[in-house]
Image (cartoon, rainbow, N blue to C red; front, side, top):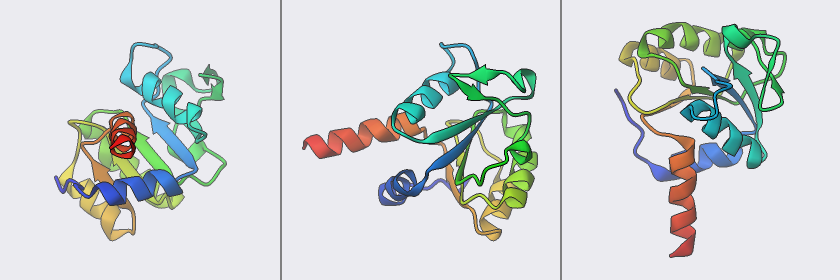
Length: 143
């Protein structure tokens, strides 16, 4: 996997992103996807949960969609909480939807799909978590 280790790039992505599709969103409060979504909403991002099992219902007050391609809004970033096997299909949808950033959570990835996303102009951030990045940013401001 081609991990982005450039904190400045991650910070820029988080600063410029406005709309996020959170793939693998969960209604269960103890799930990492739920806590990340809650934190993103609290920080002012517009978050669209994606989970076919919850399509049409709401997660944290936001309407849930079955697939990325079902979201009627332009999406800046796709944040993925799914198994690595799902990434190629997610990348195809991300290319179709012209997203700017594909964010793969900790310990998931697919080198071929990530490379395809990059070749289609999508910034790929892998093996990172927005919540951890926000804490890193806050620590650096305290120094």
